[in-house]
Structures are given as structure tokens and as C-alpha cells.
Length: 249
Image (cartoon, rainbow, N blue to C red):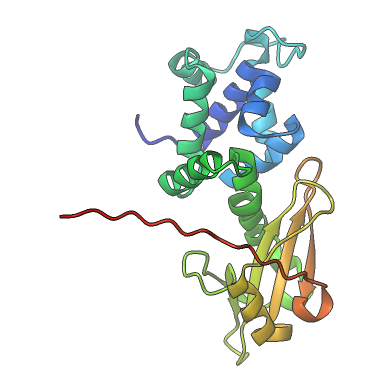
């Protein structure tokens, strides 16, 4: 498959949501269409309304309750995508979406498959909400936070240093560490790893948890500075049975 443009990726997402409708939402782990528009739009760094508009573009071609853009012909570049991908079944089309939307496609798919094998909650929607979509929301909105104004962003998500982003400013000696969390609802529980908790305790008022909430309706954020001091965390210890495999060579 040739490398797709961002517009083509958006069109594909709209085609999927139109073709498979509520079954497609459930297959990917979304609760409703608004959530799908928000999450996929943020993950692709486009407006959620664009995903909705492309779904509506294809609606007259499928037997669903929506009329879509039925008063005009489908646009040629959308028709090209339709002709190329309309025959994919739900499993293969879902895999295609993961390939074009996941930033770390192979790793994200692997983690999703392992979680399912271990009977842990995992879905395309959940992985995007708790990671990629929430982080893109932060990148788009962090400068609207007064205390972050004048700071530059450094992505530390792949370093494993106890926070997702480092905020630095030339005229300031100290940096901020920001851990981003995502929630489907307007409230819920968040968890810190032991490393994140330790780093937050060390940095104190230079550590922030940036929580993106309410993906299922309209995302908004809340910020928690010095979270170890200002939030009440419960320590949870899990006993883990570690399995290893050996063989003679």
C-alpha cells in the first residue's frame, strides 16, 4: 500500500465508520460516534469534525439511518478511496486503521494482543485515549495554561523518565515534568507507575499531571501540580508470578 496522505487517512476513517456503523464502533472499543470522532481526530492531529464529515460523505452509499450528504455526488477523491477499500471486511479494515493511525503501529498492536491474551482490558480506542490522542491534545493546548507560557516542549515519552513531556525555557533554570493521562468520562481513576510516583515526589511542584477528560462528549483538561501532595493516591501491591522458560542448547 502506498503511503497515504493525512487527508486519505481521514477519509478512510470516515469510510470505516459509515460502512460498519455501530458494529465498527464496538469492534474498536468506542462508546459512540462523538468519541470516535474526537479520538481518531486527535490521534491524526485533525479536527474531529473532519472525520464526521467524511463519514457523512459515505453514508448515502450504505444502508444506515443517516442520510449524509445525499443531495450531491460523492467527491472524486473520496470515490477513489471508496473503490479501493470498500470490499474490506471489518477485521481487515480495523487492522488497516491501526496501521495508519497508531504512531508505533507494531508495538501498539503487539501490546494490544498481549493484553487480550492475558484477559486485560485493551482496545484500539482505549490505547489511543490513554496515550496518543491525549498526548496530541496536550501538545495542541499546553500553551493555553498560564504557568506553561514561555516554555518549549520536549517529548520524553520514549525515554521512560517518569513523565511524558519536559517543558523548558531559556531564561528559567528549572524545568517542568508533565505526565499526560486520558479518561473517556468526565471523571475517573488515574494510575501512576512506581517510577512516575517517585519522580513526582522528587520534583514536587515542578511535576504536573495533565488529565484529558470526556473524550466521549467534548474533551477538556484539568491540571494537578505537585500531585503527591495535592492528590490522595492509594498504594496497590500486586503479587506477580514471574514465569521463565529455559532449554538446553
